[in-house]
Length: 219
Image (cartoon, rainbow, N blue to C red):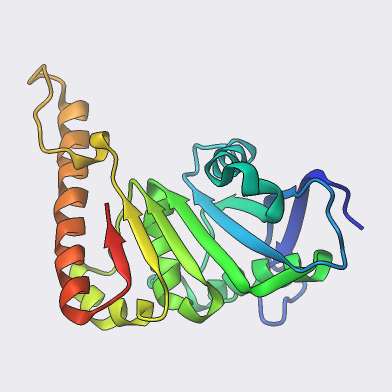
């Protein structure tokens, strides 16, 4: 059995995986006092490529607070199969990740939660729309629910979230809309425009969810 603490989890893409299939490596936090006889809920974390998986797991553990040892927490960047435009060969990757977790640990498959931050938040929302039946809830931090093939696709896929409680959280820095103190600071202006666009889109999602009675909350 896997001892409590940090671990790595390798899994192959493919259904079934073939020789030469791409191998992905996720980081895992195993609960203190892990009991293989007990089924544990899982928190899957998606983060940006320039973030560290171990650090993101610590962040998620901090969000869980005293409940952190009630969960198996795992994290990965750039998960294939999270986006509509990903190639068909990548489509099995999300469930391969869950399958690999289930082979090593005692997982409660009815309590698998998804969380993402920034670009990982965008990916988490997209993944939830594509695999809503695999998750019990979604947390999107500093991101939004916007398909990579265009905003019009949200009308086709947003309804997939009907059985899935989804929380989209914007901090003060994500509200955006203001200009940089220096008009010559073009990167800062571009970032401000981006967060303003995210905030505007999230307002649209909140209205769309309310009209369709979808369990999507924007804060």
